[in-house]
Length: 232
Image (tube, rainbow, N blue to C red; front, side, top):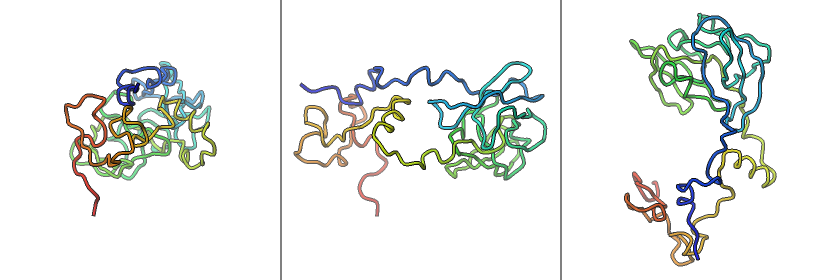
């Protein structure tokens, strides 16, 4: 008797495919107002984030942000103002062109949505009218509201993927922290009853384009592809 394929199991939402709530117990955000200064209380790792996190204390409470490269405990960071120094939190309109920033808000007050991965940074490109343009790590340029907040510097955690994984157990625990199933069996190596690409008869899954209204057990392979075939 066949089992549900991975796409069906994911849709069902069992504990195997659900990220642990414990990993996301730290909510990243900025202080409510950009005035005064904060102090780095603690630097620590988080299973849900690729960069280490920093706990910042200020006059109205505490908050968490991704740490920047070179951050130290007991270090002070400024909120607002004009000083361009790693760790300072400013509005994007107050940051000069060609400055490296990270943890950029999508809209003012949302706490930071862009460029939060370990070792990443964006560069202020140009200012046109009321819009500030930023070159993201993907080399694409995106415009932002001038009141969006950013952190000066580069997110810590660069080189995280440089160290080779020497044993399978290490890879297993890395994937488990984000609830990703590993190792993953190739579809063409399964039996016909376990996957539409299964069995040894005709291993040509790339030519199979799933219909848009196909059910989860059949919606596999090329899903709404823009193009097919080998690139020339």
